[in-house]
Amino acid sequence: MNSDSDLQIAGDILEVPHLLQPPREHPATVAEFVGLARSIAADRSQWEHLVRYDATTRWYHRLRTGPGYEVWLLSWVPGQGSGLHDHGRSSGVLTLLEGTLTERTERGTRALGEGAQRVFAPGYVHEVVNDALEPAVSLHVYYPGLTEMPMHTTCTAAPATHDEVDAVTA
Ligand SMILES: [Fe+2]
Image (tube, rainbow, N blue to C red):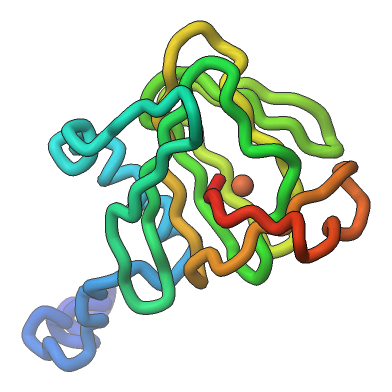
């Protein structure tokens, strides 16, 4: 017997399936939420036909829900923006599906091109705007689902009064 082989010492794990982690139906880690967003982004048939553009108000559509999380599809015509906000108790993953968006935070401004992803924790304050000349589409995963989006007047200030809470997601 070859004692150098772990396989021979421990046996073949595929023969003891109860020791294997069952594949998860729903994401439960940051990496899995990022992976979920990437898989939806890569499969345009899941979202492309649903996208609408509305010049008068921000357009959004709840694409999917799962235990403790929600997936939203948003469109942004040139000039539309979220205003400065946080996401209440929710963490999130923002993924650019199409076009370019600009994200502003207290740390500066960054352009988000197609495929770009931003992961944020509760309390993260940002503003997202389409200051490009083409419409943009983005995918937002929130965990737990977004229940409030307090607006801010500056990146570091406490949320504005509750009356200013906006239900539109970003
Ligand atoms: Fe946001």
